[in-house]
View 1 (cartoon, rainbow, N blue to C red):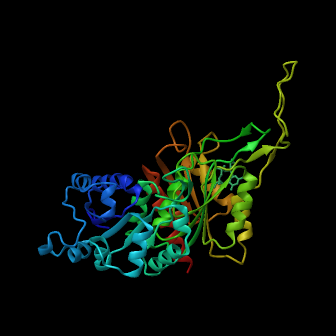
View 2: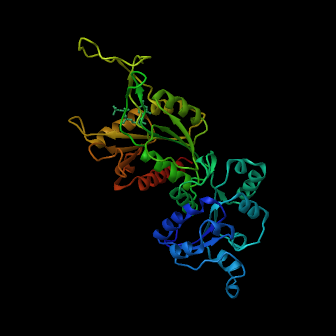
Length: 407
Ligand code: CTP
């Protein structure tokens, strides 16, 4: 991907237009040249002065401005990427019908680069069969129409139709230009940490934030995969453009993973799943004993989901790639790496991502340092401290390389 892109940011007439100033900021700060093309209606929400000041480029809404430069053709032809945010029901309808009745729709017709629409409208409009058909038409032409978020709309109402977060829109839109080397793959990722309840309010848990699992989901989505993200108590924002399944306990996670596993090409167990759970879950809150005695909690093993997936992969899905994570600390019995190698053999997965845990390491941080092991001892890959997104891409590169070798 080129470092500095020519991006057209189309803005149509919805109240969410004010959030698009932040999208523009994110794009220019990343070094891209952005040409904002507002519709006339959108100027009721955000005026040209804002777009000109933030983009550093002049802004026109009409085909009749600067005619000598033929902007209705030139802007679309010069673009590496077009993002329309917010895309209103009216704009989507005009784009689907091939109308060319303002500068933005002319740009959409002349652009030969990828076009990404981020719709925002009231739920009824989004769910209306007319809008659904228009969205399907745009998608059938290869345009990316992002699913709107579900949440508070302009008034008191809430539902699907909210503009996704600016960071998400930028990540998805730029992701379209990444190599689509996971296109067509069905990928299941677990993230976060499970909770095993002692009573209705207390649980045994762990401090996994889910950041690595979310980074895996976003990077796989951007590389073209269909992603299901099974989240156990994830404390970071969840991405759009992937199917989210929320779970709490290890048992919930087991049943959701097994549900998705039968069709998955790749399963990544990035979640920290409890190894033990209380044998008995009290139905009411445990009270302190009057005599000061301390209760003992009897634990039992949980199902090892990763090992279970390996056992049941069987003959129906021999090419399925199963990825495990290992949070390790070195001790007198061996180093972090030695424990990791033993775990890969014990669990029988295809790939194991080992990270050392401890204060400021792995859990909750933005960066990490990992070693990726496959069953080929010669292919050990150590990735020095870098972002969880960079680690996610390295994991996908290794998965793709394993898949190409097994063909
Ligand atoms: N895992 C799992 N089901 C469990 C426990 C762990 O699927 N009940 C998965 C995790 O998602 C991770 C891998 O197994 O991908 C390694 O988990 P970890 O807790 O580090 O290893 P353990 O198997 O628990 O081994 P040990 O505690 O002995 O280090």
